[in-house]
Length: 463
Image 1 (cartoon, one colour):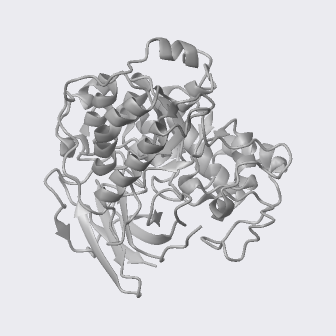
Image 2 (cartoon, rainbow, N blue to C red):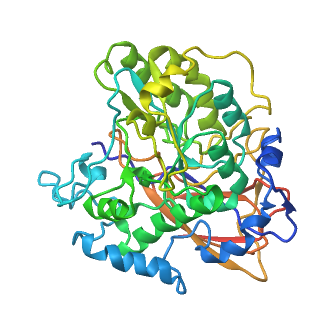
């Protein structure tokens, strides 16, 4: 596994809830009818959940069990005895890990998916049905995903959506749309950290509160989980398994959020990755079993590339299905009133040709060259967003911390590198994007770009 240089480019967006000046939106239909991506990403209040928000950690911060959450505390204590005695990893510390022995089955270091610990379930990284693509997207819900979801609807295509809990509470109607459209929803943690670096309690909280956020918005408790960057070992597997979750990884990567030689995500590199994957499908690589492809709902570029390459994927694979469907998982959630068709039933009504027509609610829009690997709101519809100064004073502030991956979820092509940002911001804030670039020699450059109507006072400190 090659070891790329440390820092390239990272982007984080923090969007806060219950903004005093924000508008109210109450229905999925209302939100889904908005065609302008910038308007889609305008912070809004969703009254049905306002009283529940204090029961969750602050969005886009590392989750911990809340002091007054007796239910979460009791659940953690219940499963603690099932967690293997494996120490948290240091971030990116593969050199000091015995990859030959691989006693922890650490995917980041060895791509291990078959646990060494007792009573821990194996990961899923492919689908059993031949010539079949298990179709899914990480990091949603994206605030500006209407055109992308309209595209999926037009193609009668369902997918597996790996949702970040902070995004779910920030963009509740976007999360509800995924359920209403019939997609399979899985957990992708609360704040997108590298899971093996966390304590047992914090790793539990990252998964638990994301599950609770999805349940709050959709009425459904997920049964599937994807660790950010694929960073999982037997300790994290045991925690997720104890919460009733199956771990889903991948073997093929679109590289749609991996920086290229320029230090930025390059469209040509994404296209090459898609084309290589499609060529493999056409050459019979998946004639005996199918594939899971890593792709993202993260931003405009990732969603637009998914739309662009869908016709070729459709032609290369006999079937494109949600991952759960490929495993005949007819009950995708804990609640038994939610049902999915099994594989045979799904493909009976599957549309195997690309449908004509364009999305009814606009286009994905132009994307800036820096991309987010953490959270969702899209960039400006007219190219790179305008920059504003980094340091702005503020009278009243909360705090947040976000882990910033510089590449995509970890793949066989390279090791994820991260940086950390501390942010202080007013609780009345709307969206902002912070970009940081390192030239590999220690020099840092920072910029802050607005994605909303009102700029948020913010002070950022690079660690």
